[in-house]
Image (cartoon, rainbow, N blue to C red; front, side):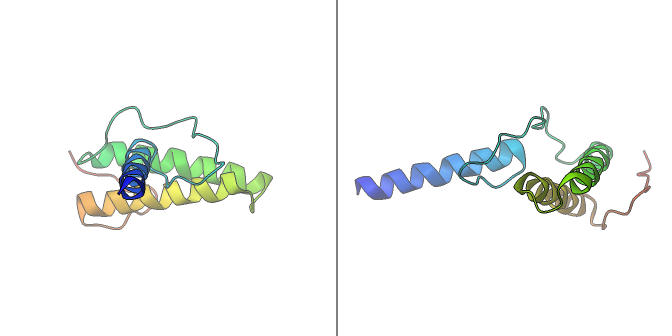
Length: 101
């Protein structure tokens, strides 16, 4: 039972990590410097801003080392933001799109 409790606690902590950082926890990973400070749930304009910023970061990291774990983590976060956008708006994200107020 003690082992089951420890596993449940670990899974809960991993869930909290993902909610806070937008990334899956991987042993040895660097903590993202720009963890979201506010929630963007239900705010398409804020999600678009995050997607654009994350896209710029991905391009920068790919130019340095496309196979680095940091690059892969940044791509995963970008995909998660795009998924969040689709869940919020029902539309796929397209670069340059504007959400009417």
